[in-house]
Length: 345
Image (cartoon, rainbow, N blue to C red; front, side, top):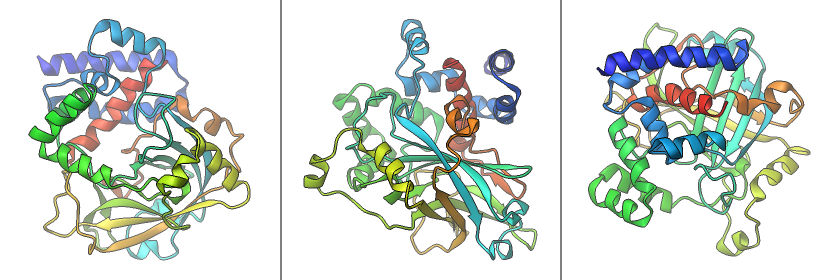
């Protein structure tokens, strides 16, 4: 029964995508549709149910209301642009032809978590999504300033999203019953409230497989380190900020000084678990410098940047030499993003 429902859902998604969006966006969308089968079979919950859990739309009435207001996660955010410069010696470490290009354009979206487009910037959460579009291939990132995730499988993901919508009671239930959620809440409670999107570290909690020059593969996770260093606000400083300071701060900053991050791959040891984003790898693990992301806003007038909300950031849209791991959270992201995107059309 799950397989039949899944097949019809995939066909329906393709029809709705084809009828509603232009061919360039379709290319990005279709790369994720093949993952819908795997992601749905891995859980009793369907992709639409997972999106409902994130959006807080558990019934027909709330779902239809959500479509009318184009409900989405990371509702508060904005797009800007820049470039990516691969590290000079990166091809000594990885066999990834994409990194042979000298400079690649970047579309970036900075955001907060949650479905509230008026959320306060004074919380700790920061998110950065990137599209790095090369001559023939693309590399997308979906990252946050939290280094670990709250669920290792899709059932626990659904439960977490459902319970947090219940407020303090639901959160306490998670703390009492779900160790991964408890660890996540404890981690987030210690996160500094950064002064800028530009002074935040960003992490890819999911693992990918990277080809090496000797034709072997190594697992790794993405880390973005701000070149300006991490800068946190004190409570007194935070009190002087408005609830909407982050966007204008970054846009003002890059008018004179680009925001720069060094991109690393943190390599897994043979004993590290690569399919569970709730597990932190030790800080002693080797890191490989991949290149620099430079956000300067110089391409902000391009249509692709101005309309970046009209597509998705597809974390498994990968160039030759990089492959997704078997992490169920990673492989559910694209079909879930597609479902959420289509609801906003």
